[in-house]
Image (cartoon, rainbow, N blue to C red; front, top):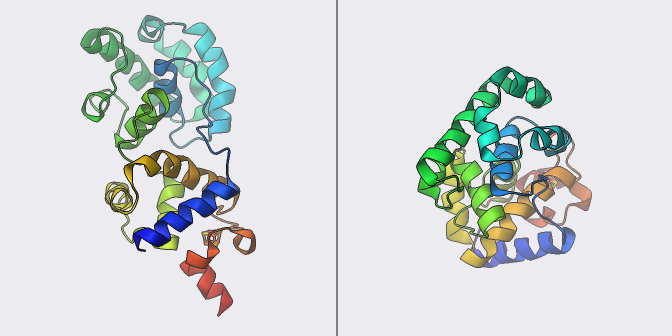
Length: 212
Ligand code: SF4
């Protein structure tokens, strides 16, 4: 896909999803770090049902660092992979306190030094907390759609991200992050894509096969 087509694709998605934004609930930067960790292999809806109890129990980063791990595991159990997630949440809280004076850092390098925070999570945190769109969080939706419409033919999220960064101007990256996720959730649903009503079907290789 060339840059002009990429620009048109973004505009079509913007028209279709004018309210596209982050759907995880949070009030503080560390709450978002936790919510993003919980969202791995879990829906944002499920995370948003779990975090009210957690955030009411852990009001500060120190509370996350000090909560008994079995209590934490019990609260976050519905989000899956709760043992690993609980371990990472506690360790991450300790690292933020000890290495960053209790303030969530805002650079990719610093964020990815934290337990349980990879490049995809760091992109989400930088964007939603600090308004920095340095890259694109390539999740399962962004990956599938990028391949379908020819934004990238790569399979690895890091390589897809680099292709997207080359295609779009920096000021569009914030929108791309949200738009691809919203398109994946609302229209390009993995098992039942709504191709006939898809606003970007003219770019889609799958749609072309349907028409032949
Ligand atoms: S045409 Fe269908 S498969 Fe292609 S991007 Fe749209 S919804 Fe997804």
